Length: 379
Image 1: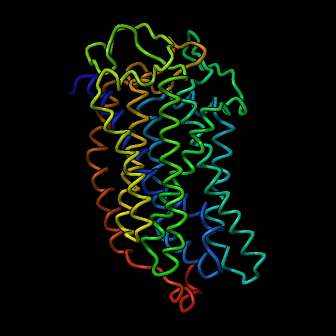
Image 2: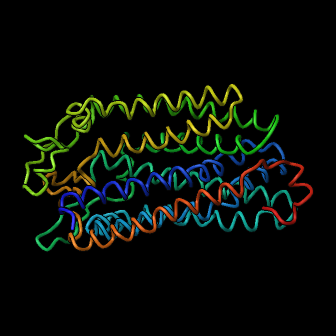
Image 3: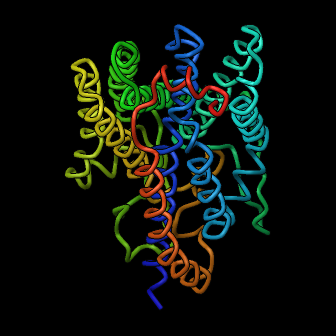
């Protein structure tokens, strides 16, 4: 059996991979839905957008379910605090996601323009609202959630839904919308052709440039104004201190402490910024496959940057910083982590291979001509 500290670190990496997998795959589905009412100048073009993602969006969404299940198994206290304290926000995101399966299946059942327009806006909400909510939740990890654990490790959450709308969290929510919009536009333009690809490319370029600005603003806010948590007298990446009680302090700019301790890590957020700029340039130049590849790199680097800034904190507390949950104190037993690690090592490569096979089989352009000739069998 691996050492307990190694297992805990391995599960932090696994959950990061699952979250990244969700945003890289389902992120462009959400982005396509956000763009749907704006990029489609006709009903056929809007159906092209839907059919670009229609064959894979359900499979992509399972990454989110898998990440939630892994959190329940590896970090049960984190799961309990999150899904109880943030219950209403989770329900808002979940019910907004319901618009997607219903919208995809029913939008084109009737030819009435009012019917289809209503479902277009429902799908727009199904893309925008979950993205905003998940962005708010990510932003509030840096702000800190108002919870504490009593002597029996029961969570006491003292905040409400509207308390999540901290200015920094709202900024991160906007960043999430720009990120998914860029990624969705980059994917759609890589699947369509001609003038429509150029039209979508204008939205992709605008979203990528917006993302670049928001990355700089969020990074500057983290480093200069926002109060963050830090472990006093020890490096965050020191595994030898994993089981030792440490004093957690709240300091201005605390969330960039890991980057100050290990400057080479700055390559990750800089990669996110550079990839967003490259996405804008490639989209403007009509190199749509390159634009999608750089967009995926921007998504990965942005999420990894956030994870590295928070490390080792998983759920920071604004009420009792000393009681914040970290990957060291919130994990399941070593035996549980070891058994699940073997399961992941077996099935995760199979899932990745299957996902690659699906996208290889379903590759190729989606055109207006296909919609017009096979419309009854498509979304």
